[in-house]
Image (cartoon, rainbow, N blue to C red; front, side):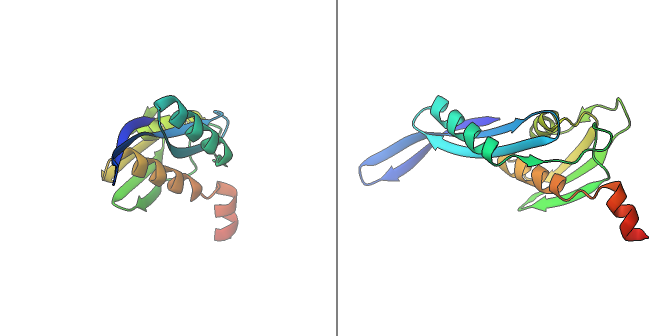
Length: 144
């Protein structure tokens, strides 16, 4: 999803390394993300991919295409609003949210981001929001 060069100042001078943010998924309701650093981009992406696979979580979907209900979630200064859409409505969202949705198998979703658009914070907010979903059956049982 994102790579960048980062520098650590030490007594011996600048130590440069590469930083990678990676999202993985099987398009059937499982997705994960991770960050990693290494000396070159390929190693950073490889490390992040391995971590993301280990940290993958199940994301519940409604009709195998969208989320169950509207979700509001906040992570630091990033507020995210996820809305289910009708069949064929498509993905209308920030590129990070679109990447997560596609890899999790969500095809119909609308999302708004208020505040920071930092890709890492957007990814964390999105995964936090998707984890807070309540399936319709549980919601119906809770209401009686």
